[in-house]
Length: 153
Image 1 (cartoon, rainbow, N blue to C red):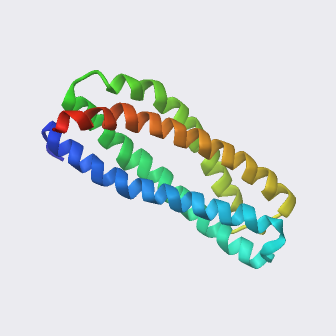
Image 2: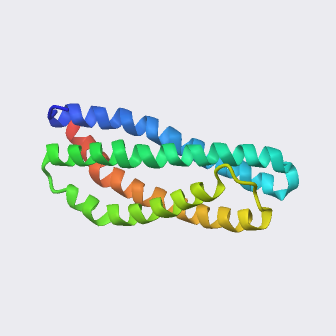
Image 3: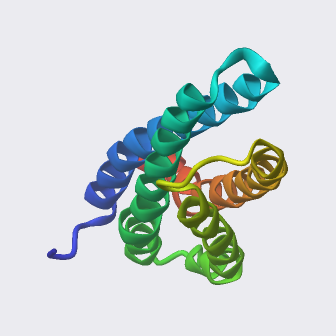
């Protein structure tokens, strides 16, 4: 992709983030459905189906982050040349750690019969990892994108 000027890069990232954060809400919504369903509201078959959807959403979300969003945020930081890319160097390793946990969860629960007692524990751990990841991503967005918003005037 040819290098874009800072304004073009900002607009492209803005559009990408809007779509990606919508995906994040879908992940959170499906996660919440499963957690609530664990309280006996869902039979195992329904729980299994929702679990498969959650796993697919997780993979799509994590992949979009690593292969699109973070790359474009870094491109934006470089196009503005304001030193904001240093934040990514500090935050990206921690995001990478959450990716490993999320993908291990996905691998464990894709196409496998659910053990309700283990699922409850694993969902709790996944929730903590997702919360941590979302905070790190928000830090990245604030430092590498929102900081450039005022320069768009």
